[in-house]
Amino acid sequence: MSSIINHRLINQQIAGTQFTTPQEIVQWMGAMQAQDYAMAKWAIGLRVPGLNDAALEKAFNDGSILRTHLLRPTWHFVSPKDIRWMITLTAPRINALNAYQYRQFELDAKLFKRCNNIFVKALQGGNHLTRTALAGELEKAKIKADGIKLICIMMRAELDGILCSGPRHVKQFTYALLEERVPPAKPMLKQEALAKLTGLYFTSRGPATVQDFATWGGLTVAHAKEGINLLKGQLTNESIQGKEYWLAANAPHHTHEPTEKFQSTFLMPNYDEYAIGYKDRSAVLGEKTNTGNVKIDNPIFNHALIVDGIAAGTWKHTIKGNKTLVETTPPKPLSKTKQQAVAKAVKRYLEFVDRKKEE
Image 1 (cartoon, rainbow, N blue to C red):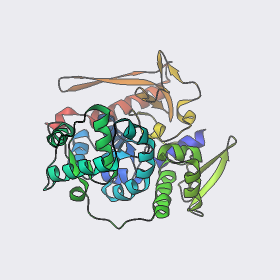
Image 2 (cartoon, one colour):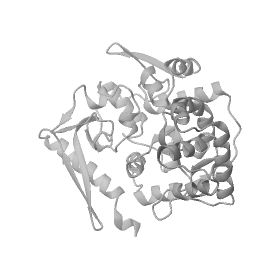
Image 3 (cartoon, rainbow, N blue to C red):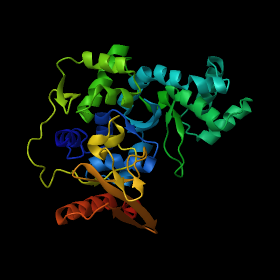
Image 4 (cartoon, rainbow, N blue to C red):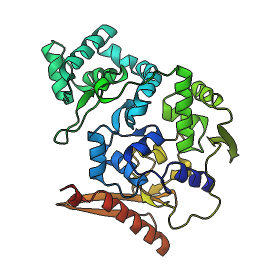
């Protein structure tokens, strides 16, 4: 498994990176799961030394990175350069997955169109409104929606290419019109978009299996295989412990022991692509990984502590005034070298969230 881990640490830009901006990392990764907003920002910061939380907040507010529903579906960070073609590719599948809830709340194409028109009228001209404010606009038109029904309406507007994230207002999320937030782009044919998504996935997350890609992308296995077939010559495969793994043919190979600069010990954010990006997470989490009373293979991952690329405990942070405190909990004593690596990882996180830098 060490070969898989080293490749993934490199390809996911965790071991080290040449990138310097949030938008470069998000574009490299294609899409990064982001329902836990604070941790999603740290997921980018983890991959770009020197970035702090304030810089990520600025990038989000100025639209350099966007947050919308993509893939499975859930919230993801995505680049403005990729949002249009990715939504066009994934929206039909997501709408099919949502169809039961659409029927349950009597949401049909006619009602979605009415809601979209209301959103356009309310937001055009550079306005940015919260979900609550937009629900108020719907209510003015005698469309009452809250809870899951409202979530369905908002998500459908995102999938229809009407809405995307706007800047935060007093730490509240807002919506903006995609047409006003993202420059126009030439539409992609379905096969071209599938090939692009496939390339982004295996370049940034390989080695990975067909099933890993299908799960991450919310695709059928057949579509995942089709994507691989579209990239003949650009991807290579190898058998590891009886499973077929794919990665970019030009992926860098790490054949030596990691150096001090090779980051393999870190505080993993919840929902980080290092684990959530795969159906089979055993390479990172182990077959039966437990730390005390906390099971790391929980989908939220409970702030997993990664040591030498493998889950080796948990971590948590608390805020007292302008100070952030971090506590790590490995299930067993670590060697002095590993303790030093953990201390360095904690320092890196504290530099990222340094609240004084936000003042």
